[in-house]
Image 1 (cartoon, one colour):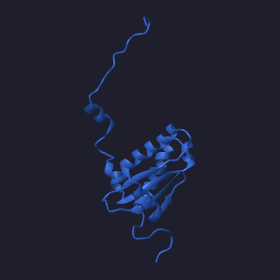
Image 2 (cartoon, helix red, strand yellow; image 1 turned 30 degrees about the vertical axis):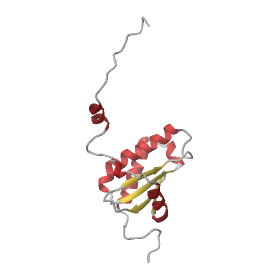
Image 3 (cartoon, one colour; image 1 turned 90 degrees about the horizontal axis):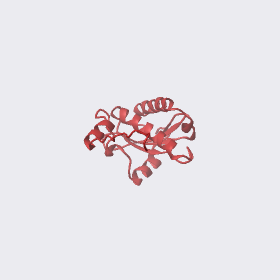
Image 4 (cartoon, helix red, strand yellow; image 1 turned 45 degrees about the vertical axis):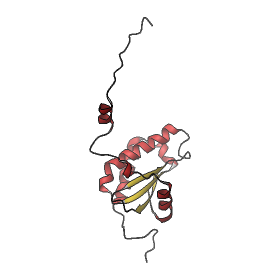
Length: 148
């Protein structure tokens, strides 16, 4: 088109892209994720529930030496994948920055349908509150409210 100026494309090498996208101060390695169906099933059966207004978390101790995260953001939260992915992206980022402060637990984070209506700052502050509650859980207490 004669009236539209051409813009040269700028390409970066793969190493430059990884430096931009992954800060070294807060990694989220594969070992920090719940990936197997068995891990999710174990959490559903032996976990303790911790909740906030927009999130619920099922937490159980693990033998891996660090906190691991799994997420469940269903279509009930939002019919639009873009909106569900926004919630997951915020949760991953928040977990990445607080993972070192958490005990060795597996966490299944479940978003409630009200999370879709909130802005990013509200979700971040609520997740920070949730991570604080998980960090202060009494690890010796079993699931539920009754003690032996």
